[in-house]
Length: 117
Image (cartoon, helix red, strand yellow):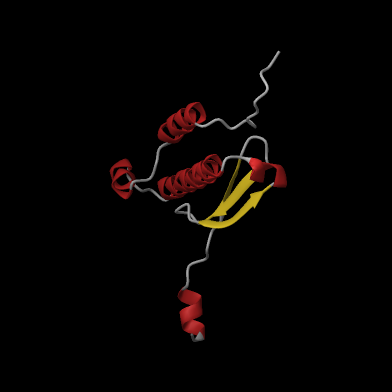
């Protein structure tokens, strides 16, 4: 690569999302592809499928937040709502609704065989 090619490379922006407990966090690209995953040792005792689902959910959450930021940036530059819709960028309402659905679907608290008293 020469100096001109390096200047044309877009800067990679990273996004993060974490579980409410903070025990699992992901660092992703704007599209939600994982760049790094942090898992506290106690979380490794979880069911592997549940852990994988939580990581995937966090990747999707980071991508949604990135989409919101990109939408806000383009709106500030004068992009029309029709253009933003064609790009598939989420609205705040869509992201909020999706987060609510995912909270209902996925148990984010540590699971135990003990019942609360």
